[in-house]
Amino acid sequence: MKIRKIAAAALAAVLSLTALSACGSNNAQDDAHPQSISFWYYDLPTAAQTEAWKRAADQFTQQTGVKVKFEVKSFTQIAQNSSQFLDSNQAPDIMESNRGNGSAGMLSSMELLSDLKPYVKKYGWDKKITKADASIAKYDDMGIMSGTKWVGLPNYAEYQRVYYNKTMFDKYGIKIPTTMAEFEQACQEFKSHGITPIAADAQEYGVMWLWWSLVGTKADKRFIDDWQMYRHDVNWNAEPLTYATNTINDWVKKGYISRSATGLKAEDTTNSFIKGNEYPIYQTGTWNQSRFIAQIKNFDWTAAALPGTKMLQGCTGNLLTIPTKSHHKDLAAKLLNNVLSVENQDGIGNAGGIPLAADMSKINNVKNREMIREYSQYSQKGDLSYYPDYPASNLTDDISAQFQELVNGTETPKQVLDALHKSYDTGVVDMGFKD
Image (cartoon, rainbow, N blue to C red):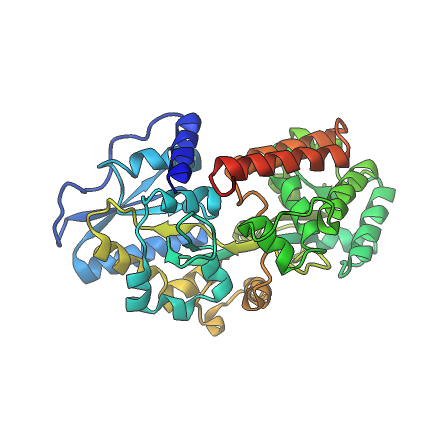
């Protein structure tokens, strides 16, 4: 545990960029009736969950007379500086945190986040949240997922979904695929018409996520547990890894993914798909669903998990945590309970998000209902692969960098897997999870 804390502190020091501003919560006032409590977040103000948080805050203020002071931080600020400000008097009362061993798990092992178990029992949160969804919110003393300590409250979910421009498919007489063979056949047919079928960015995380979805077509629960929870050593020659890496390489060579993806970011590919005349296929997070519903006006679209998926790439969304140094924990928990109310969960679903405790009869949009049901099918069975970079904090950058090399043609699939093997092992050791 001592090694774990030293490693985490060293990592935070190395990654630290610009310190957060001094404005924060009223932590100096440790009283039962403060004027306000503070809530730090980094999601978009228009995101379904953000809107639900603010509705819950309005209800909370009506109930208690206490205002909620929302402060927007960048993901980088929270991810790279959290171990510093959470150990200071600037800690907020509620903080949105990325999930995974290298994020919420690390902060928990440093004793910077409260264990919410008493509030889970008080409010019955464990009765509303499935075991699979709760696993990403619970950590052991080392900061590894699926422990017994409730580090944060999950209140929505997300996953990687393939979006199809149905109008383009219809134009060329191509069937929306339901198997991997049909998926690759559709790619080949579009390519024969001079169209690059798959929108994918390699400058950020798009190719990495597509790779992990391919892993999920071959993986089983044991493989995912080994990767995410270190149950056994990862088999780097296992079919999920070799198949997925070779397939990405094959798709680049065949022109299904453009080599120019190395210069693209997620916003580039998202905007290109929304335009409707460039890419017929786009795998992206379900956080874009509400955007597609609002902005796509000139073509019809449909969506589903990548054909053949056994383990779905996704999980509950970012966690709402109560820092250890919050002086208003009971009030913070009351606000979190409002977020998990059926009313606010319905709001997440109707705004295009995936709620965890909604009344499905109250979800009005057909596309949203389909998305929520698809996620639930995997969540109820525990068939979630989470995301590939969760085991250690270095993997987000390292995996993406390796797939830039693969798409660029400067490394072979074997070289990519060898480099990922090294990065994975180094990251897990540096995080203190293994010797």
